[in-house]
Length: 494
Image (cartoon, rainbow, N blue to C red; front, side, top):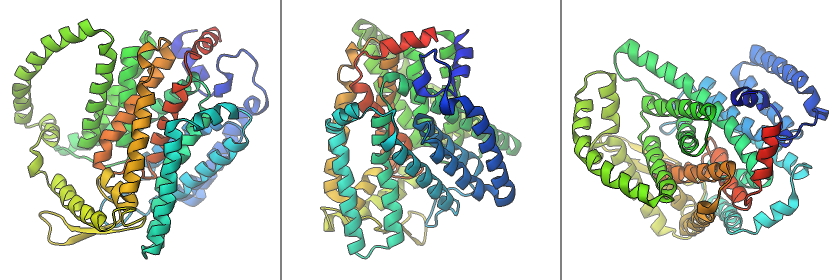
């Protein structure tokens, strides 16, 4: 059986069954029946209740599935969000008012999360001896401390008289990060678990990117001008592009290579067509760091590449950029979006104005900032009216405003601990699945850290679960050693 056929056949198999020749039993035996029944229920909900009812129905079904297959529910949580971005996003989340669909999105995420948490606590597939050992590591202790700071800032925000709806809404987005972090710590027992989860979420996000690539390119071509939309999908796409890049470099086999190349192209095209500069810049930064780590193992090759390619790049880059910007077609319009003078960009000016206001507020209340639910108002350069918003278009500013310098110190400790275990022993890792998984998780973390400058990517409910699971994977893979080797043998024999 070819690698591609085997990958397709294994897609719906539970992670615990990978590498085992045992016939399906229990829930797995009747999975097709339950899929058909779930599809019928979802169809009825769509017919009589519209997208709103379908959203809640899908969330309930995924939450129930978690009690039987928590690993499948974990990747389906990402699939649920991609479904929302593609089919249930009517307004870009900009300005003072939140899109109406956010209410249904939040309910869906809450239902899935509740199902996953309860199911994981009672799941026989969780090895609590391993979990207890992992919880004693520095990243887990730092995440627990960050959770306590979130709780303290919530109490402080309510005491300050901040609007209770905004307080609880922001707490919900923040608490998803530690929740999915610990779900990843508990559910990712071995490197193969992470590998299977990665393969499923990468294809789900790549397929979601296809929708935006097709939609935005067709609209742009029909209008003869660059047309772009904003969607949280772009944050997912940038992360998966980093994973695809690692797979291209690390993994062997034409099937895996072609899959990774197609995912990389689709995600990058989606980012370019959406015009998201933060995601594209974060992707480039993460790729540069991860590539340097990979090439550094071959110091002679790294030196030759640096000596040969750097002068060529410096000499060619100005002419390339000038020729692209001079193009009057769609390519030139897209290039003008990404090649610009920072000080002349209105979006950048707005972020600077908002950051100045936020820092003044934090200076008056340094320990816990203004607390959860706090609002800030600033004048957008070039506009005549003052904007009042509860969020901050800078992740570090959001962290300071909601949790103060105490939250900043704990978050920096978490970052340092994750980076330390992310690179610890990486150079000596020889197993292909384990090494690719560790590099992918570390690369996504670096991508998220760079993206954090452009928004609270770790604390927004639409993306926090995804990145929280990746942080949990860093912890899970660090303690795996070379235990992936037996699993790989079993997989090959299956």
